[in-house]
Image 1 (cartoon, rainbow, N blue to C red):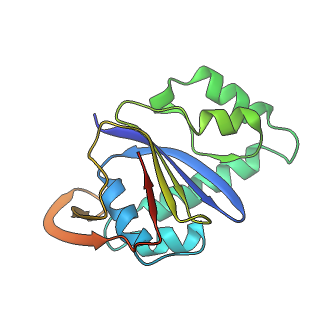
Image 2 (image 1 turned 45 degrees about the vertical axis):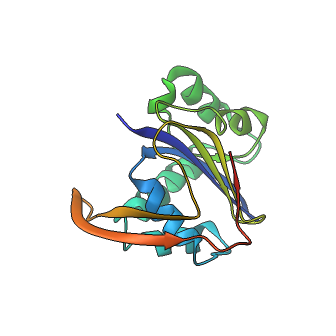
Length: 160
């Protein structure tokens, strides 16, 4: 299975989750519009990979409900108990979650830093990230035959 750890960072902090690699081109397409926040990135991803934004918003609501500021025992326990590919979505709130956000799962780990406009491929066994690429549209239920292209601006750094 093409599961990847994807970590998104903006000025408000970071979010890390596991998703199918097929979401990656849609995120790259959204990066090409130079979003300033994670919410903008997810909004711009939606036409190409439907449901990702809602899934992340729901996961964040659950995280916030179960983890009070300064009391992160619940997420620590969940990260310890779950296999990496089954780990819950989480906010990066301390060193434990920061380290977990860098842990690859089956197809790898990618960090998208919106502040520095940098895409870091910690490990990528899914597909090479290039400045220009293409992907298939996910309609919320399945991959469709429709495709899209992306072109990352020159101010975005790709770190192998």
